[in-house]
Image 1: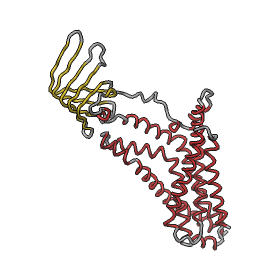
Image 2 (image 1 turned 180 degrees about the vertical axis):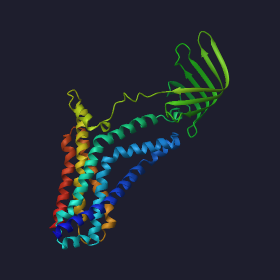
Image 3 (image 1 turned 90 degrees about the vertical axis):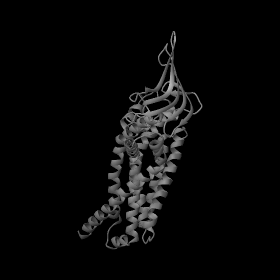
Image 4 (image 1 turned 60 degrees about the vertical axis):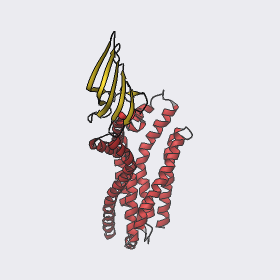
Length: 368
């Protein structure tokens, strides 16, 4: 009875030791991912003129879409760090000496991995696809946020809000143009030719990339109908709009929920390439949740090595090494599956089975 009580207390102690490390790991990996997005976010803020609210939305959607992958990574970090500290401080030796069975010591990691696995599954099935979808829509909106970026200096540009635009000088940092020529044939039968010495592009912050004010200074408007009309102006504003049909935009495989993937896979007219893509995505959604349990086993196996005096400093290195090893193997197999060289199920689950074997082997070696 005393042994059981000690086992429960030890399990609770280990479990609540892992929770702060799990949260810390989540923050660390989110920060690492955002570091790789800094250049793109800086470009949106400085070059494309996107406000901070929109930048915050981009960051939020990126984090949400990546949560299923971040959960097992953070769990591995927490398990290695916690069990490594217990080993380095000889607490693991004390637990074994007090008669605690290794199954009781493993239980907290398994329980946490099951909880995180369920959370990862729910996120992967519904929430992450929603976040990825919102990111796709927002990124499409921002693709042409800075309208001046589509106007090339000394070149006739036809992709500028259905206008043909030419400018001798383009200052993309502030959106100003010099010696501007515009040809507008959107109104049939009455095309406009506008010539101005200066121009400025002012994007609408409420609809970036789709509502733009083009302010021209010191120029002439030429309208050709049955007669030729010329109008001289000091300032002339053109409000341009280019709405995007967000509703009919097709979702990517990453933006589909698990139920939507199932419905698509039931179709018999899918192309072989699409079939492989959707099957790979379907198996990945489930496998990434099971990965939490596999990473927990690996973390306990590596962390329970006794007398590891460098455990605290090497925990993060071990964690990063395992994560890189797994994802390199997974991405390689996934590429082979998408190319039709491997069955999607085999490609997705093989790395998981291999690392599960590594986890069980490390547990067996350290516990004997």
